[in-house]
Length: 199
View 1 (cartoon, rainbow, N blue to C red):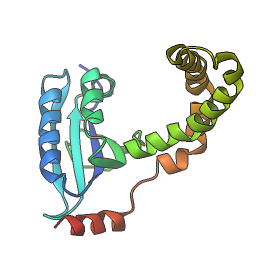
View 2: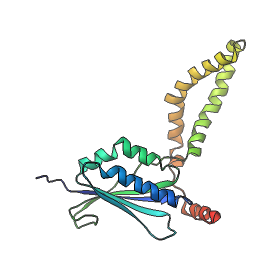
View 3: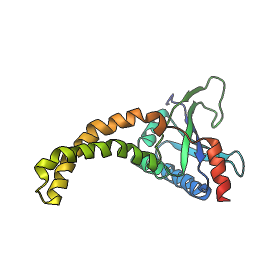
View 4: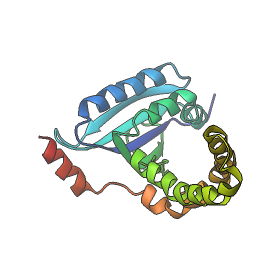
């Protein structure tokens, strides 16, 4: 008989204004994906109110190993990535216990920060900031060599040089420097104002 206890994961997510119906469909899709996964015991979600932007989603697996396999799966990764533009994860907690969804005395509760995917406009800015000056410098330095070349070959040389520099040096540095801004959560007041504007 296994001594592993079931693990319940509680995730608080802020749904961006105008995405309530999509979020409902997304949550249903996640349940369907997890339903056939080994060790899956159930899932659900609740909201604080009809107009609340905060959703509390829960799912439960028979043991930590089954849970980890689900969380590392390609199916779940695809599911999480599909919601990156309509919600933000604010808190993740794991509860280990025998009594189901509810915390019991002696349960171990661990807060697990989930990776926050920056909005695409922030990703675009973080790429532009190093790419523009680097591209400008490359064109300036290579111009004496490539000024008589056909345009396609001149551009090709630039890309061949800049791609590894961006990938392995400049983009990681920029991402690290901008991390607090990239990972920042949206202020609730902004969400409320945006929701009011859509009504």
